[in-house]
Image (cartoon, rainbow over all chains, first blue to last red; front, side):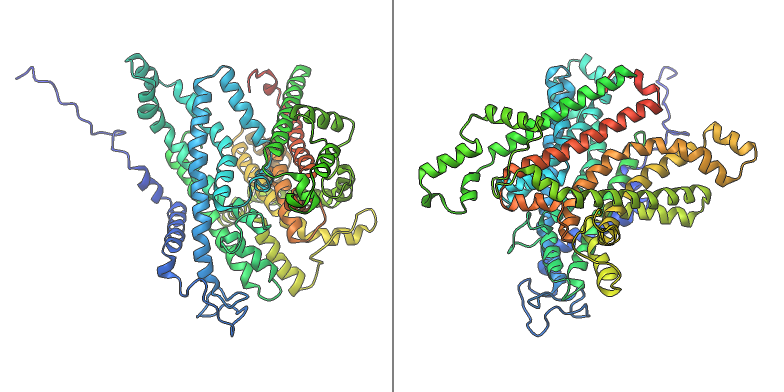
Length: 292
Length: 320
């Protein structure tokens, strides 16, 4: 029996099981609050048919430009529609555009960045030069030009925003991957003869994921911001479709009739962008402590 | 040093060149014919010959590389082409509008610095939790808050309710400095808050980092007051990383100008851009976007060169 292998204890200082990232995130009060706010906004907009106090098109001509009241917390608009209801329904458009654009930006950016990192020769050079060139143009400006070119349907907006945010994601994906490519686990995976697809899917991507996830949160915030900006100047979502940006635009043109009309959609955009930014920053700190 | 500057100049010129190609190609792949917009009608009503003569007049009958070369050659001679819509040379249109935008940008920049630097210094001199919390809060909100929201709030509070400042229009600084500054004040505060938040974020981080440097310990050790240490020793050194914010700030100013000029009905380059998007005036559009790219690229170049002067270690770096 003396030959039996000694059981190595995994207990001991420094060897406790690490808490999962989710828990570490929730332990930060800021992040927990931001997460709660984002969750609430998403739930409220998705569940708009359930939560909204009125129908989005229900008009009330006795109550045009109503000030905030218990019946209409955000006031009413030029047709007596409930602004809270319109903000909830408008959020569906804004969040869909932002989420879909982010998905495109992340997918395209990751492929773009990974290819550039793997092919460090002239292919990588060209890919990164293209990214730099696009990034030399302010996002809103390029957005305006692309909207002028392809028209401002919701689908076009999604694609345009996705394309706009892809280069910065590509840059990040490339620099993250270049670090991972110097790691021992990568060398180990190559030396045991794992296929490149397997290495990318099972080894590199999971390790690069934390950085990319934090980035995604910030891209959603930025996409909400840019969509609202474009819609605000009348070059984004087009009425009768409603988004936070179009509400703001209509509220702004009726500023002198009702202050609450532009203010509440504006506050909602601010809160959503702020919460997503805080969430992204904290995600970065929790998932990738070395970098921040 | 010369080699360092040269390398950065060459890569900036290359980047500018590439973005001019990108912008130009973008304008050409655009569906829809600018000549039809120009004629203001549908294609059925226009006979082929008129269309052809307009295309010739605009130079659209040549091949795309030829068009690009003549566009770039024109720019080299200071000729940015002319508006497809109003026929005016683009340079004339830009000259009319550039003042309103420049005044706005300069004032926003000043307001941003005037908020950010004293606030960050105060944060370093009196390290207490409340101030720290307030300043971080301001920076976080200032970055997240959309410019149009600040603008609308300012119009309501300072413009309409208190009736302190004009909310619309623009008067040239050269003609009437006082009215010019007054009309530019609300838009530049609107834009300046974002600038302040951006600078504060970087400045506060670098002030914190530098507080543990040995020269700061020496300064404290020789008995200087806290504020003397911060103002004379920490601030100058902490300002260097803040220079790198210049690129972000220029991008913020260019993008923000579009929104702010819309909110405050200011006849600047931003509103010219929005107008030309609505009119599909590609002649103006391509010139404006190229100008914005140039502003950003030149700023980045200046930042790199300046950093190279300040920090000799950067000059020896070979790859970017």
